[in-house]
Structure formats: structure tokens, C-alpha cells
Image (tube, rainbow, N blue to C red; front, side):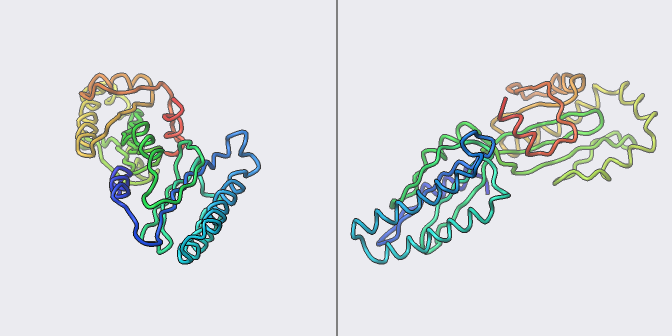
Amino acid sequence: MRFSEKLNDLQQKRTAGSQKILSLYLNTDRSSADQQGGEWKIKLKNGLNKFEEYIDEMGNDHDELKGYRELKDKVYKTITGRERELKRSVVLFATPDESLWVMEDLQVPIETSFHWEKEPVLDQLEDLQSSYPYSGIVVINKEDATVLETEMGVLVDEFHYTFDPDTEDWREHQGPFDAAISGANTNKRDEFQDRFEANQQRWLKNLSNKVEKKAKKNKWQETYLMGEKGYLNEFESQLSIKKTKKTGKNPSKMEPTKIIDQVIAG
């Protein structure tokens, strides 16, 4: 499910009785100077404890206090138990009865905050959706291309295209890249090099058509272009998507998350 769909669902959530919703935004960016010692864990523990103290002091419904304590423990254990997997931030929305539990790791920074209310607090999430909408990142190389679809700095899906000189067409593969995919091209390397140079414009036009169809089908709001400069410029000239953002960086053999990081960093 896309973030936009999750956000739409969250916007409809309301609780009744003693049930309330914990909205948690946690900055876990280890590259930040004030996070080198794992300070986020202290902020997480203190933030959760403050709400328990507040509920207790207010003398609210016993069931509310009991439910919050159980939820607090689960949230703390779940997030700290995934310490090695965390990226730059975590957002979480949850109720004690677990009828609502939405947790996402993000590769974009957020401001740490905690909320305990009848409805989810979505201001930061709505800002993130506006700043990091559903987008396509197209990485162009000579005989292959990678398309990463991302939203709010998170990798949603990835596709790889490899050129088949026998059919003179691009083969699409969904999911992580496998080096074996392009193995068929190595048998006729020299012949392929000559033919690609001679037919570069036409073959890149074929690729641009495939990318345009995917952009339209999946409703990209932004398109980023990266890769080998010569082929990137030619590909861009064939592309009918005019509102693109191009970078000359060549992320060859770079992990998808690192590519997304480059785009976010500008």
C-alpha cells in the first residue's frame, strides 16, 4: 500500500471510550551530530514515559492507563529491537487494542514528537508527502537501465531493463537486480557495441516509451534522471516527460537506497 493510501486511511481514524491513538515521530538519523551515541533511544524512552506520568496524574480512566502502559512497552521493544534496520526516522500510529498499528522506517529526516489523542496527528506526515511525493528515478547505462519508484524516501518498487540484441528490444525484470539477467549480452559484446552506437537513438527511444508508460500507469508526480552522461542526454531528448530533474551523477552498481539518498540530498 502506498503512503498516500495509508495517509488517507489514517485521516479517517477516530477512537471511542478510553481508547486513544499514539502518534510517534522519531528521528533516528545516525549521521546527525546529536545522534552519534544513540540519543534517539533516550528520547523515545523519555517521551513514552512522560505520557504515562501525565495520564496517571490526570487520574484518567484506569483502562486508559493500563492500555497505554502495555502499548508503551510494545512500542519501545519493537523500535529498539530493530535498531540495526532503522534508517533516518520512524513514524508510528497505534492503539492499545492494536486495531491500529502503522509503523514505517523513512530515509528522510523528521522532528521527534509524541502525541496521545483521539485521532492521529498527521501534520508531519502530510508535509512529508508534499515534499517527497511518489516519484520515479531512472538510471541510464549503455545496455541496461534501472527504474526505482519511491515515496517519502522509501523504495516502493524497482524494475530493470536489459537490452537484448537478438530481439532489439528491452527486457523488463521486476525486483532486485540479478547479474545473470544481463549475461546473454556478453556473448556478442563487440558486435553489440558497434550495433548500439549505430542504433542508439532508435533503441533509447524504445526504452523511453516503456518508461513513459510506467510513469503514466503508476502516476509518478516527479521524475529523476541519472546515469552515464552521453546516454542520459540522448534518453532525455527522447522522453516526452518534460518535467524531469537530472543529475550527472552515475550511481553504477550502487544500492537502491543509496541512489534514493543521492536524489534526496540533491
